[in-house]
Image 1 (cartoon, helix red, strand yellow):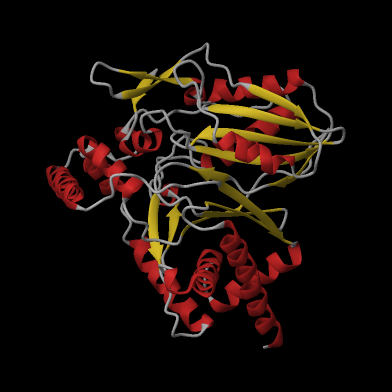
Image 2 (cartoon, helix red, strand yellow):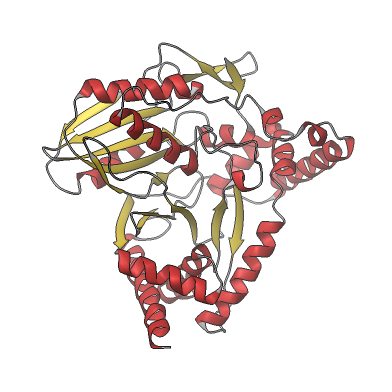
Length: 422
Protein backbone atom coordinates (compact mmCIF):
# COMPACT_ATOMS: atom_id res chain seq x y z
CA UNK A 1 0.00 0.00 0.00
CA UNK A 2 1.33 3.44 -0.89
CA UNK A 3 0.21 6.95 -1.78
CA UNK A 4 1.74 10.25 -2.80
CA UNK A 5 2.08 12.88 -0.09
CA UNK A 6 -0.43 15.69 -0.43
CA UNK A 7 0.77 19.30 -0.81
CA UNK A 8 0.45 20.11 2.90
CA UNK A 9 2.22 16.89 3.89
CA UNK A 10 5.10 17.62 1.51
CA UNK A 11 5.36 21.14 2.92
CA UNK A 12 5.64 19.79 6.48
CA UNK A 13 8.09 17.07 5.45
CA UNK A 14 10.31 19.51 3.56
CA UNK A 15 13.46 17.95 2.19
CA UNK A 16 13.68 15.69 5.23
CA UNK A 17 16.72 17.42 6.70
CA UNK A 18 14.91 19.47 9.37
CA UNK A 19 12.71 18.04 12.14
CA UNK A 20 9.06 19.09 12.47
CA UNK A 21 7.89 16.97 15.37
CA UNK A 22 4.76 16.84 17.52
CA UNK A 23 5.05 15.46 21.06
CA UNK A 24 2.03 14.11 22.97
CA UNK A 25 2.93 13.46 26.65
CA UNK A 26 0.64 11.73 29.15
CA UNK A 27 0.96 10.44 32.71
CA UNK A 28 -0.10 6.98 33.88
CA UNK A 29 -0.37 5.64 37.42
CA UNK A 30 0.44 1.93 37.55
CA UNK A 31 3.15 -0.59 36.75
CA UNK A 32 3.89 -1.74 33.22
CA UNK A 33 6.12 -4.19 31.40
CA UNK A 34 7.77 -3.54 28.06
CA UNK A 35 6.05 -6.51 26.42
CA UNK A 36 2.61 -4.98 27.10
CA UNK A 37 3.63 -1.62 25.65
CA UNK A 38 5.20 -3.27 22.60
CA UNK A 39 2.01 -5.28 22.02
CA UNK A 40 -0.15 -2.14 22.22
CA UNK A 41 2.08 -0.35 19.70
CA UNK A 42 1.99 -3.39 17.39
CA UNK A 43 -1.83 -3.34 17.55
CA UNK A 44 -1.81 0.36 16.59
CA UNK A 45 0.28 -0.48 13.53
CA UNK A 46 -2.07 -3.33 12.65
CA UNK A 47 -5.00 -0.90 12.65
CA UNK A 48 -3.32 2.09 10.98
CA UNK A 49 -1.29 1.28 7.83
CA UNK A 50 0.37 4.72 7.75
CA UNK A 51 1.87 4.08 11.22
CA UNK A 52 4.16 1.59 9.51
CA UNK A 53 4.84 3.68 6.43
CA UNK A 54 8.27 4.83 5.32
CA UNK A 55 9.07 7.45 2.69
CA UNK A 56 10.14 6.46 -0.81
CA UNK A 57 10.88 8.91 -3.63
CA UNK A 58 9.92 8.17 -7.23
CA UNK A 59 11.90 9.00 -10.38
CA UNK A 60 10.63 12.61 -10.22
CA UNK A 61 11.76 12.86 -6.58
CA UNK A 62 8.14 12.97 -5.38
CA UNK A 63 7.77 11.46 -1.87
CA UNK A 64 5.35 8.60 -1.24
CA UNK A 65 4.11 6.96 1.94
CA UNK A 66 4.82 3.25 1.48
CA UNK A 67 3.77 0.63 4.02
CA UNK A 68 6.64 -1.53 5.28
CA UNK A 69 6.01 -4.55 7.51
CA UNK A 70 9.57 -4.14 8.84
CA UNK A 71 8.88 -0.62 10.17
CA UNK A 72 8.36 -1.02 13.93
CA UNK A 73 7.68 1.90 16.30
CA UNK A 74 10.94 2.55 18.22
CA UNK A 75 10.76 2.68 22.03
CA UNK A 76 13.13 4.72 24.21
CA UNK A 77 13.11 4.03 27.96
CA UNK A 78 14.69 6.16 30.68
CA UNK A 79 14.40 6.30 34.45
CA UNK A 80 12.31 9.11 35.92
CA UNK A 81 14.37 11.52 38.02
CA UNK A 82 12.15 14.60 38.35
CA UNK A 83 8.41 15.22 38.05
CA UNK A 84 8.95 17.48 35.05
CA UNK A 85 11.36 15.22 33.13
CA UNK A 86 8.72 15.09 30.41
CA UNK A 87 9.27 18.79 29.66
CA UNK A 88 12.97 18.35 28.94
CA UNK A 89 12.40 15.10 27.06
CA UNK A 90 9.73 16.80 24.94
CA UNK A 91 12.26 19.41 23.86
CA UNK A 92 14.84 16.73 23.10
CA UNK A 93 12.31 14.96 20.89
CA UNK A 94 11.68 18.14 18.90
CA UNK A 95 15.14 17.88 17.42
CA UNK A 96 15.45 14.15 16.78
CA UNK A 97 15.17 13.29 13.12
CA UNK A 98 13.11 10.37 11.90
CA UNK A 99 14.97 7.78 9.85
CA UNK A 100 12.05 7.88 7.47
CA UNK A 101 13.51 5.55 4.84
CA UNK A 102 13.55 2.66 7.32
CA UNK A 103 11.37 3.61 10.30
CA UNK A 104 7.83 4.98 10.71
CA UNK A 105 6.99 8.60 11.49
CA UNK A 106 6.15 7.68 15.08
CA UNK A 107 8.19 6.74 18.12
CA UNK A 108 7.47 6.12 21.80
CA UNK A 109 9.21 7.42 24.94
CA UNK A 110 8.71 5.83 28.37
CA UNK A 111 9.93 7.87 31.36
CA UNK A 112 9.70 5.03 33.84
CA UNK A 113 8.83 5.64 37.49
CA UNK A 114 7.92 3.28 40.32
CA UNK A 115 4.23 4.19 40.63
CA UNK A 116 3.86 6.88 37.99
CA UNK A 117 5.25 6.88 34.46
CA UNK A 118 5.22 9.64 31.90
CA UNK A 119 4.95 8.45 28.32
CA UNK A 120 5.11 10.26 25.01
CA UNK A 121 4.06 9.69 21.45
CA UNK A 122 6.30 11.54 18.99
CA UNK A 123 5.00 12.03 15.45
CA UNK A 124 6.37 13.84 12.46
CA UNK A 125 3.82 16.59 11.85
CA UNK A 126 3.34 15.50 8.23
CA UNK A 127 1.75 12.26 9.47
CA UNK A 128 -1.08 13.39 11.73
CA UNK A 129 -2.82 16.25 13.52
CA UNK A 130 -3.88 16.59 17.15
CA UNK A 131 -7.22 14.89 16.54
CA UNK A 132 -5.56 11.83 15.02
CA UNK A 133 -3.02 11.71 17.85
CA UNK A 134 -5.73 11.66 20.53
CA UNK A 135 -7.51 8.80 18.78
CA UNK A 136 -4.25 6.84 18.68
CA UNK A 137 -3.72 7.53 22.40
CA UNK A 138 -7.24 6.31 23.19
CA UNK A 139 -6.62 3.09 21.26
CA UNK A 140 -3.21 2.55 22.88
CA UNK A 141 -4.72 2.77 26.37
CA UNK A 142 -7.58 0.42 25.47
CA UNK A 143 -5.13 -2.25 24.31
CA UNK A 144 -2.79 -1.64 27.25
CA UNK A 145 -5.82 -2.25 29.47
CA UNK A 146 -7.04 -5.28 27.50
CA UNK A 147 -4.64 -6.89 24.97
CA UNK A 148 -7.62 -8.33 23.08
CA UNK A 149 -9.61 -5.06 22.91
CA UNK A 150 -11.34 -4.43 19.59
CA UNK A 151 -10.06 -1.13 18.19
CA UNK A 152 -11.22 -1.77 14.63
CA UNK A 153 -9.27 -1.35 11.40
CA UNK A 154 -8.73 1.98 9.67
CA UNK A 155 -9.84 2.36 6.07
CA UNK A 156 -6.93 4.67 5.21
CA UNK A 157 -7.06 7.79 3.09
CA UNK A 158 -5.28 6.98 -0.19
CA UNK A 159 -5.49 10.40 -1.80
CA UNK A 160 -7.57 13.49 -2.43
CA UNK A 161 -10.30 11.30 -3.98
CA UNK A 162 -11.01 9.85 -0.52
CA UNK A 163 -11.66 13.32 0.92
CA UNK A 164 -13.23 15.39 -1.85
CA UNK A 165 -16.60 14.03 -3.08
CA UNK A 166 -16.40 12.71 -6.65
CA UNK A 167 -19.04 15.13 -7.99
CA UNK A 168 -16.88 18.06 -6.84
CA UNK A 169 -13.57 16.50 -7.87
CA UNK A 170 -14.85 15.78 -11.39
CA UNK A 171 -16.70 19.09 -11.84
CA UNK A 172 -15.21 21.12 -14.69
CA UNK A 173 -16.17 24.36 -12.94
CA UNK A 174 -14.60 23.36 -9.62
CA UNK A 175 -11.44 22.06 -11.31
CA UNK A 176 -11.11 25.25 -13.36
CA UNK A 177 -11.65 27.39 -10.25
CA UNK A 178 -9.05 25.43 -8.27
CA UNK A 179 -6.43 25.56 -11.02
CA UNK A 180 -7.03 29.27 -11.63
CA UNK A 181 -6.68 30.14 -7.94
CA UNK A 182 -3.65 27.85 -7.69
CA UNK A 183 -1.92 29.48 -10.68
CA UNK A 184 -2.65 32.99 -9.42
CA UNK A 185 -1.33 32.12 -5.96
CA UNK A 186 1.78 30.44 -7.38
CA UNK A 187 2.51 33.49 -9.56
CA UNK A 188 1.91 35.96 -6.71
CA UNK A 189 4.23 34.05 -4.37
CA UNK A 190 7.10 34.50 -6.85
CA UNK A 191 6.85 38.29 -6.53
CA UNK A 192 6.52 38.56 -2.76
CA UNK A 193 9.87 39.88 -1.47
CA UNK A 194 11.55 37.49 0.97
CA UNK A 195 14.93 37.53 2.66
CA UNK A 196 17.77 35.38 1.43
CA UNK A 197 18.04 33.72 4.83
CA UNK A 198 15.48 32.52 7.33
CA UNK A 199 15.28 34.21 10.74
CA UNK A 200 17.68 32.72 13.26
CA UNK A 201 15.37 30.92 15.71
CA UNK A 202 18.08 30.74 18.36
CA UNK A 203 17.03 28.63 21.37
CA UNK A 204 13.53 27.17 21.67
CA UNK A 205 11.47 26.91 24.86
CA UNK A 206 8.36 25.21 26.26
CA UNK A 207 6.17 26.73 29.00
CA UNK A 208 3.45 24.67 30.66
CA UNK A 209 0.62 25.44 33.08
CA UNK A 210 -2.87 24.32 34.05
CA UNK A 211 -6.10 25.85 35.27
CA UNK A 212 -7.61 23.81 38.10
CA UNK A 213 -11.09 22.33 37.63
CA UNK A 214 -12.79 25.25 39.43
CA UNK A 215 -11.20 27.91 37.20
CA UNK A 216 -11.73 25.76 34.10
CA UNK A 217 -15.44 25.34 34.85
CA UNK A 218 -15.86 29.05 35.61
CA UNK A 219 -14.22 29.85 32.27
CA UNK A 220 -16.67 27.59 30.43
CA UNK A 221 -19.59 29.17 32.33
CA UNK A 222 -18.33 32.66 31.44
CA UNK A 223 -18.25 31.73 27.76
CA UNK A 224 -21.78 30.30 27.87
CA UNK A 225 -23.06 33.42 29.62
CA UNK A 226 -21.49 35.63 26.95
CA UNK A 227 -22.44 33.34 24.06
CA UNK A 228 -18.87 32.93 22.83
CA UNK A 229 -16.67 29.87 22.40
CA UNK A 230 -13.79 29.04 24.70
CA UNK A 231 -11.54 29.35 21.66
CA UNK A 232 -12.63 32.95 21.02
CA UNK A 233 -12.34 33.89 24.70
CA UNK A 234 -8.79 32.54 24.99
CA UNK A 235 -7.80 34.09 21.64
CA UNK A 236 -9.02 37.49 22.87
CA UNK A 237 -7.10 37.11 26.13
CA UNK A 238 -3.99 36.03 24.23
CA UNK A 239 -4.12 39.01 21.84
CA UNK A 240 -4.62 41.44 24.72
CA UNK A 241 -1.66 39.87 26.54
CA UNK A 242 0.56 40.23 23.45
CA UNK A 243 -0.49 43.89 23.13
CA UNK A 244 0.24 44.58 26.80
CA UNK A 245 3.70 42.96 26.71
CA UNK A 246 4.89 43.78 23.18
CA UNK A 247 3.13 47.10 22.56
CA UNK A 248 3.65 48.26 18.98
CA UNK A 249 5.62 45.08 18.32
CA UNK A 250 2.42 43.03 18.48
CA UNK A 251 0.74 42.15 15.16
CA UNK A 252 -2.78 41.74 16.62
CA UNK A 253 -3.22 38.46 14.74
CA UNK A 254 -3.69 34.95 16.06
CA UNK A 255 -3.97 31.98 13.68
CA UNK A 256 -6.46 29.32 14.78
CA UNK A 257 -6.52 25.85 13.20
CA UNK A 258 -9.99 24.49 12.47
CA UNK A 259 -10.56 20.72 12.47
CA UNK A 260 -11.27 19.67 8.88
CA UNK A 261 -13.48 16.85 10.21
CA UNK A 262 -16.16 19.46 10.97
CA UNK A 263 -16.62 19.99 7.22
CA UNK A 264 -15.34 16.82 5.54
CA UNK A 265 -17.25 13.96 7.14
CA UNK A 266 -15.31 11.45 5.04
CA UNK A 267 -12.38 12.02 7.41
CA UNK A 268 -13.11 10.03 10.54
CA UNK A 269 -11.76 10.71 14.02
CA UNK A 270 -9.40 7.74 13.80
CA UNK A 271 -8.02 8.57 10.36
CA UNK A 272 -4.29 9.24 10.33
CA UNK A 273 -4.34 12.61 8.58
CA UNK A 274 -2.58 15.96 8.88
CA UNK A 275 -4.47 18.42 6.64
CA UNK A 276 -5.85 21.43 8.49
CA UNK A 277 -7.87 24.58 7.87
CA UNK A 278 -7.13 27.98 9.38
CA UNK A 279 -8.76 31.26 10.36
CA UNK A 280 -7.03 34.42 11.60
CA UNK A 281 -8.55 36.53 14.38
CA UNK A 282 -7.78 40.09 15.45
CA UNK A 283 -9.15 42.32 18.20
CA UNK A 284 -10.21 45.95 18.45
CA UNK A 285 -8.22 47.36 21.35
CA UNK A 286 -10.46 50.43 21.50
CA UNK A 287 -13.33 48.29 22.78
CA UNK A 288 -13.80 46.78 26.22
CA UNK A 289 -12.88 43.12 26.59
CA UNK A 290 -16.50 41.90 26.53
CA UNK A 291 -17.46 44.15 23.58
CA UNK A 292 -14.42 42.96 21.69
CA UNK A 293 -15.30 39.36 22.52
CA UNK A 294 -18.68 39.65 20.77
CA UNK A 295 -17.00 41.20 17.72
CA UNK A 296 -14.36 38.49 17.55
CA UNK A 297 -17.00 35.76 17.82
CA UNK A 298 -18.91 37.25 14.87
CA UNK A 299 -15.68 37.35 12.89
CA UNK A 300 -14.82 33.76 13.84
CA UNK A 301 -18.29 32.52 12.86
CA UNK A 302 -18.18 34.35 9.54
CA UNK A 303 -14.69 33.15 8.62
CA UNK A 304 -15.40 29.58 9.69
CA UNK A 305 -18.61 29.47 7.63
CA UNK A 306 -16.61 30.43 4.52
CA UNK A 307 -14.08 27.62 4.91
CA UNK A 308 -14.24 25.13 2.06
CA UNK A 309 -11.96 22.13 2.62
CA UNK A 310 -12.66 20.64 -0.79
CA UNK A 311 -11.72 23.62 -2.95
CA UNK A 312 -8.79 24.35 -0.60
CA UNK A 313 -7.41 20.84 -1.12
CA UNK A 314 -7.98 21.02 -4.88
CA UNK A 315 -6.17 24.37 -5.07
CA UNK A 316 -3.21 23.04 -3.12
CA UNK A 317 -3.04 19.80 -5.09
CA UNK A 318 -2.89 21.83 -8.32
CA UNK A 319 0.10 23.80 -7.02
CA UNK A 320 2.76 21.18 -6.23
CA UNK A 321 5.19 22.92 -8.60
CA UNK A 322 4.96 26.04 -6.37
CA UNK A 323 5.90 24.11 -3.23
CA UNK A 324 9.52 25.29 -3.05
CA UNK A 325 8.53 28.97 -3.45
CA UNK A 326 5.77 28.63 -0.86
CA UNK A 327 8.13 26.96 1.61
CA UNK A 328 10.73 29.67 1.00
CA UNK A 329 8.09 32.33 1.70
CA UNK A 330 7.17 30.70 5.02
CA UNK A 331 10.79 30.26 6.06
CA UNK A 332 12.24 33.57 4.92
CA UNK A 333 9.26 35.93 4.85
CA UNK A 334 8.59 38.43 7.61
CA UNK A 335 6.36 37.22 10.41
CA UNK A 336 2.87 38.73 10.26
CA UNK A 337 1.08 37.06 13.17
CA UNK A 338 1.69 36.86 16.91
CA UNK A 339 0.90 33.25 17.55
CA UNK A 340 -0.70 30.03 16.43
CA UNK A 341 -3.41 29.07 18.92
CA UNK A 342 -4.84 25.56 18.84
CA UNK A 343 -7.62 24.36 21.15
CA UNK A 344 -8.11 20.58 21.14
CA UNK A 345 -11.14 20.99 23.40
CA UNK A 346 -12.36 18.36 25.85
CA UNK A 347 -10.48 15.10 25.36
CA UNK A 348 -12.91 12.20 25.53
CA UNK A 349 -10.60 9.46 26.84
CA UNK A 350 -11.28 7.21 29.83
CA UNK A 351 -9.49 8.01 33.07
CA UNK A 352 -9.75 4.73 35.00
CA UNK A 353 -8.68 1.34 33.67
CA UNK A 354 -8.41 -2.12 35.26
CA UNK A 355 -4.76 -1.98 36.35
CA UNK A 356 -3.85 1.67 35.83
CA UNK A 357 -5.25 5.19 35.55
CA UNK A 358 -4.62 8.04 33.13
CA UNK A 359 -3.69 10.87 35.49
CA UNK A 360 -3.31 13.65 32.96
CA UNK A 361 -2.73 14.46 29.32
CA UNK A 362 -0.30 17.31 28.77
CA UNK A 363 -1.22 19.48 25.79
CA UNK A 364 0.89 18.56 22.75
CA UNK A 365 3.90 20.60 21.75
CA UNK A 366 5.16 21.13 18.22
CA UNK A 367 7.97 23.09 16.65
CA UNK A 368 9.31 23.24 13.12
CA UNK A 369 11.25 25.22 10.52
CA UNK A 370 8.41 27.01 8.69
CA UNK A 371 8.61 30.56 10.03
CA UNK A 372 7.31 31.92 13.34
CA UNK A 373 7.38 29.08 15.87
CA UNK A 374 5.26 30.83 18.53
CA UNK A 375 2.43 28.40 19.30
CA UNK A 376 -0.01 27.83 22.15
CA UNK A 377 -1.94 24.57 22.47
CA UNK A 378 -4.67 23.95 25.01
CA UNK A 379 -6.77 20.92 25.86
CA UNK A 380 -9.10 19.86 28.66
CA UNK A 381 -8.94 16.51 30.44
CA UNK A 382 -10.70 15.53 33.67
CA UNK A 383 -12.11 19.04 33.89
CA UNK A 384 -8.72 20.80 33.91
CA UNK A 385 -7.59 23.10 31.13
CA UNK A 386 -3.95 22.49 30.21
CA UNK A 387 -1.63 24.82 28.24
CA UNK A 388 1.60 24.35 26.31
CA UNK A 389 3.25 27.55 25.06
CA UNK A 390 6.29 27.15 22.84
CA UNK A 391 8.45 29.46 20.82
CA UNK A 392 11.94 30.64 19.97
CA UNK A 393 14.12 33.48 21.23
CA UNK A 394 14.54 34.76 17.67
CA UNK A 395 10.78 35.35 17.32
CA UNK A 396 9.53 35.90 20.87
CA UNK A 397 12.08 36.14 23.70
CA UNK A 398 11.49 33.71 26.55
CA UNK A 399 11.12 36.49 29.14
CA UNK A 400 8.37 38.08 27.03
CA UNK A 401 6.67 34.71 26.61
CA UNK A 402 6.60 34.31 30.40
CA UNK A 403 5.11 37.81 30.74
CA UNK A 404 2.48 37.00 28.10
CA UNK A 405 1.59 33.81 29.98
CA UNK A 406 1.26 35.75 33.25
CA UNK A 407 -0.78 38.52 31.61
CA UNK A 408 -3.10 36.04 29.91
CA UNK A 409 -3.75 34.21 33.20
CA UNK A 410 -4.39 37.59 34.87
CA UNK A 411 -6.89 38.62 32.16
CA UNK A 412 -8.77 35.33 32.44
CA UNK A 413 -9.03 35.57 36.22
CA UNK A 414 -10.12 39.23 36.06
CA UNK A 415 -12.94 38.35 33.67
CA UNK A 416 -14.06 35.47 35.88
CA UNK A 417 -14.09 37.80 38.89
CA UNK A 418 -16.26 40.28 36.96
CA UNK A 419 -18.71 37.47 36.20
CA UNK A 420 -18.80 36.42 39.86
CA UNK A 421 -19.51 40.01 40.98
CA UNK A 422 -22.20 40.59 38.37
